[in-house]
Image 1 (cartoon, one colour):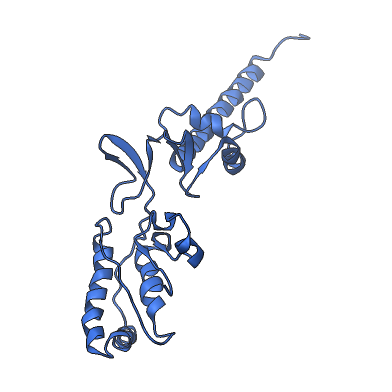
Image 2 (image 1 turned 180 degrees about the horizontal axis):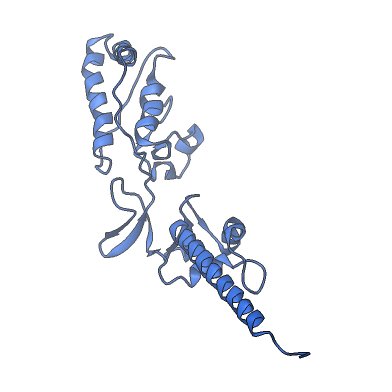
Length: 231
C-alpha cells in the first residue's frame, strides 16, 4: 500500500539510532575521563591546571588542545571540551598547586586540597656490569681522591644524593659549594647531570645568571636541586 510504513524498517532505524546514541555515550564518557585526568580546577586562580603541560589554561587553550580529541556531537560538530569539564561532577577541584615529593597526586594540608605538581622519575635500581662499576669507581676517585678534603667530601656528597632519592620529600637546609681551580673535571656532572638522572629533569633547575641576579627566585619553586653555575 502506497505510503504505508514498513514496521521492519522503522525497527531497524530505531535500533541504529539507539546504537548511535549508545556509542556516543561511551565516547563522551571516555572524553570526560581524559579531561578529568588532564584538567584540575584551581579555585584560587579560577582556572584549570593542565597536568601534561604543567600550566594554567584558559577556555581557548582547552579548546585548542582537546577539541580535536572530542567525539562527534549528535547534532553535528564536536562536543565542547570546556562544557564537558565544567559540567563534570567528578572533576578534581583544589585550592592551589603544591609541590611535595613523595605525596599523593592530590593531598590535603591544613584542611585544603592541593594538586601535587611533583613528577616521580620512577627510578629502578640496576645491577651494574663490571665495566660500569669500574668506570663509576674511577670517576669517584678522579673527582674526590686528589686531597684530604675531597676524600671527606666525596662520601658525604654521595650520601646527600642517595638521601634525596630515598627521602624525596624531606627538606635539606644546606647549600653545597663545589669548587675547582680548573674547568672540565666533573663539577656539572655531579651537580646537574647525575641529579637529573636520579631525580628527573623536571625536578632539577639550572637558572641563568640573569635569573639569579634578578628580583624573582621562582627557579627554586618545584625543584629538589638547583644548580647555580660559576657564582
